[in-house]
Image (tube, rainbow, N blue to C red):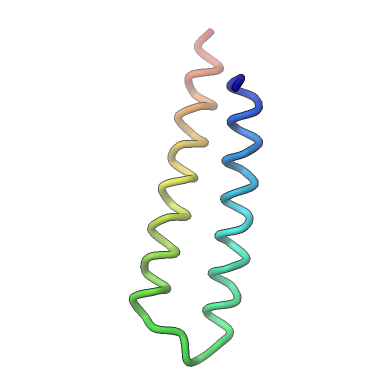
Length: 59
């Protein structure tokens, strides 16, 4: 998988997590721990995207 393809996949995952988090926040019955986990996963993906972008600009 090329770096660009990996970036596209990570951005897709980030958007899915963003949508899932939004849905969880809208439903009052969502467990706070689930919301924290979604935020953590979303941040991890965002960090991966940023590291790839920084590494890509160094070359």
